[in-house]
Length: 75
Image (cartoon, rainbow, N blue to C red; front, side):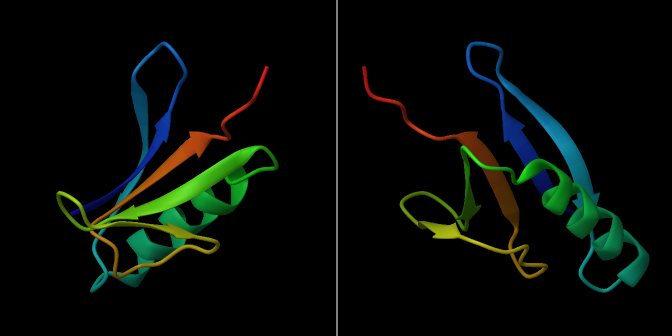
């Protein structure tokens, strides 16, 4: 099962959804969770393994894992 996770600053991460690309009902739920949580001020990354991470702008059902993170803020 693939996972959609939300990185929580200082509090680890939260699994928002799991899906199997061959089960459309799970993909739809994960895509909805992505749309709900991919808000202004957050970035999304597709995690394909060590050293294989890339930014994405839309839900990708073929990704093994997607991580939503708060944007980096300067001070």
